Length: 162
Image (tube, rainbow, N blue to C red; front, side):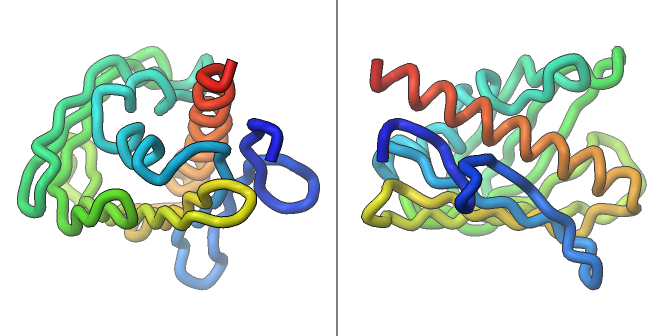
């Protein structure tokens, strides 16, 4: 693979919403190692790629990356500050990461975000599932955000290859 982030034959990163479950599903193949990709998911590096230009920008991230550990993120979305929080459920680096996800103080049950990292002949495949989001509007905004965030992560990894 020539340093690209790809999904499918068209070479684009996409994210979809399952019409029955409402879960967001996304996948991309990165020209990197599983360890490097896991580090991008579990360090302050999240601030570099967890973005959707003009819509949201993650500016802070902290995490106690262990089962039962907590994480938090903050930034600006839609011109207003936002804060997210969650708990790590599964930490099996560099293969799997599962954590809860919800806006701080929101009167909703937390969503669950699962990442699976799989080495392949053409790179490392990241598959994510974001389940339990409260409504269609939130799901659509989050789906679009995952798409742009995975594109940005691919750009960062490509730039490292120089």
